Length: 600
Image (cartoon, rainbow, N blue to C red):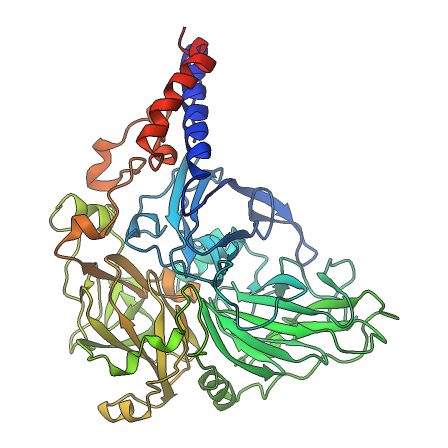
């Protein structure tokens, strides 16, 4: 909560109100079924030198990357975010399904941005979820400067995990990185100039270990992961980059895949894994080597065809406690650089563990998605950037999304006409590309099939907020009705981000049981920024009973700007809104006895 202090009396008043609500909630939490956790974060610019050159990055609580949000299934999460940037900010919670609560999604279609110098309190429940996710800023290309961090959702104690408890839990962020600021990169993309080769690949915000003095200059700090011999660690790897698919590997160690984006997988060993933009994986890695030296942890670009990428390799160090010396020699080999067949087959090999429980005790496979009748089919085709009305734009089905000044969700709530149209086409239309605010009209409790057809020359990733979807098929060429015969209708993995290879297609199935307006977007930041996104509107006819109400701390903008009060007058009581009424009554007397002087 942010409260300005125009006078000492008002400051004392707001201070007491703040603490009163905290006391109410803290006491009520002790008897609540689902606990609450509170985080107070400031998002600001900090100085870092990830590639040996000082630059301005975005930190959360002064950290780059930001802190890990570590919670347990069904916990209620309250995150107070203070925006100390020089431009508006929204944080989005990549993969958190926000059940019945699109108000907390943190994208332009659902929330007004947090103005510079303001704060906003997110409140959501990690309902019926487990797994590995991350958060990041969703506006103005800010993700290119940082502002991201991990989200870990643990199983409740009563739900068995399908593997023995690891000896440690490690989060790794791998990302392409540019020395240019996010504002310069934003202008570059808007002018029609491609991003080009990154200046490097970061691992947890650090540049590469100096594995080759001819490639990596001296003086670059690198990440070291400390482990003990014989122990097994869960390593969560997130590709939080802008546009580069990365191959992840640990020298001489197997990667036992166990989870991806909230789903336990069939446990399989890999020597390396292609991780595309926006994707997250959990591996169990056993320290079973002889520790004659340290070992390389590598993240290297995939599907690139220029010598300019030679220096763009991320290298960290895996250090056994009994290691006899530093890592040396060549890096472990990646797959064939241009072999999309290898990567596609690897993706197809990732299967859902249908016998394991996850957020609930019943097996994941008890939801037999392959037996559900499809109600809507969308074939969504992307295209590379093109000039539309004199500006460089990207499109889905010939439409480049235009974000209105009034978020879609607010326009829907207040019945404001003309903000958006429920007319997004289910196929590419035979008409010129255009810029528009066109939204998919989803059917509540319908079952939608979406086919992404990639007409670009690079791998693209697509993400759907509010849902986990089933990846049921992918192949080269053009999707046809006959392609359904190749679908995996039994144990296709459920996740929230999927890759689509160039000149290829990927098919997903999604059950529309979460009412709200949800963002379907390219995770590749250059494609997303130029318009490659659409929103999916899922309205329950009995909306009042299905969706959470408009938050009392809503920020208003656009056509609703007149409703916005000065933030100094807006006290957020929502932290105490779940406290039992009886408890509030009892504590009111305690409050007056303890804090009565606040009002005199």
